[in-house]
Length: 317
Image 1 (cartoon, one colour):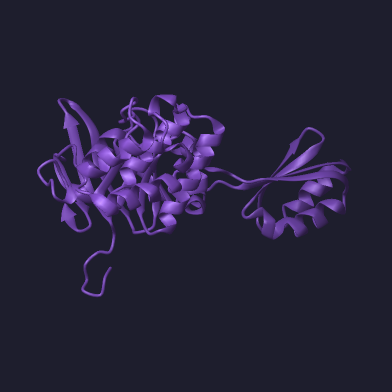
Image 2 (cartoon, rainbow, N blue to C red):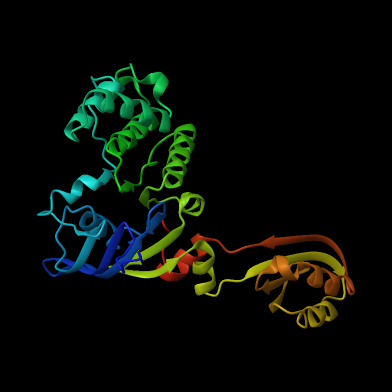
């Protein structure tokens, strides 16, 4: 909150709902995004994610609840505040016969940029997305990944307070994908709020400060990566392979702080442990008293496991 008691969040969504006939697509979603924060909204197909994004972008009016951008009401009737938004949809919005720079000049003019300011801003966003050296080439000669990067540049021209990136890396080559991710990292570092959706969990892990997992029209869980993993009680696993007295080793390991469970697997043991790196030395010491260890491996839970736990589905479903 600011000193005057007002919120400093760029986005505030409070208990929004939206139905289409008998189908309730969104059943009470609340979230907030702070300046400089990248917020990941993840959900399986049909979870209500697209409808939620459309309401945040002011394209749909909620049936109930409120959406605010920079402290102002957001919706189809509130056209002025929508100038603070940059929306980069999955579908490309570019003119293939125009050059990259010409596309940006056009979109910048739509945002009331002119003259020196427009030229300077086009130069800046071309650098951000790594296309300065291809600015004079027609867009029809760009690869799919380059087109997506130019699409992002168009959404950045007017320095929006919030940039919505809806699956910006779908179908792109690895080099362009990495360039897009690096661009998003740079944006949050400049203080821009970013709402990011993806079907690639590793992107969410890399980019997002906080993540909301939506399913059945509701945010089922929200927090940082570590908070989400802690929320569902996922434990680290320490696998130890070796020879010796497995029964005695099991008894010893069950006395080590942090060890929740010990199970025999193959020719070794697997310990379920809360925060394994902290307790690893004690675990290895206890096991070594009864086993000649040949290998020790730590597996830490990830967001994919959390997502599956909360929704019963893979992210790409």
